[in-house]
Structure formats: structure tokens, C-alpha cells
Image (cartoon, rainbow, N blue to C red):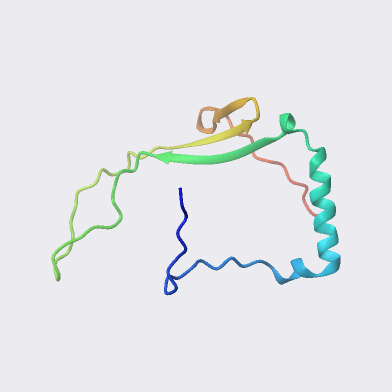
Length: 112
């Protein structure tokens, strides 16, 4: 499969990075961090993500003829929202339905 070059007038996405990455002190710290990543055990890594789903089926936007108001019936007050927390590991996928369990608020130390 051949890859064709982009046309000269075709806009390309800019690939920006922080200017600090080019400083010698930051560059040496970055390389040290990259070198230390070799010690990570992939079987111990867990990637956690949270998402949600809602039964609120009402559209927030629509189209109507110019000068006319858009009117659409929607159900009122019967909405439910479910939150899912999932963990992806090297050996599989685990999830927990947060709304089905009693979530305990996280306790944070209070200033004295």
C-alpha cells in the first residue's frame, strides 16, 4: 500500500509540545523516567475508567422553519442515570455498577 504525500495547500494538524521539554535538566529527568518504566510489571497495571448512561432521551437541539419555534414533547421526571466504573488489566476486564452498590464518600483530612 502506497502512502501519498499531502497536497501543498492541504492544512496539517500542528503537533505542539511544551518548550520546557528541550531544556537539558528536563530532558535528563524525562530520560530517567523513561528508563525507569522498563521496571513496570504489565500484570500489575490497572487502567480505571468511569462512564455513565442516562435514560433522558430528550433532544437538546433541533431544527424548525425560520421564524418558528421548535416544540417537541418530552417525558418529564422519569430519568435515571447509571454510572459504571471499569478496570482493564492485562488478563481481563472488570467492572462495577456504581449505582447498584452503596458508594461511601471518600474521607479527606480536614485542615486543623
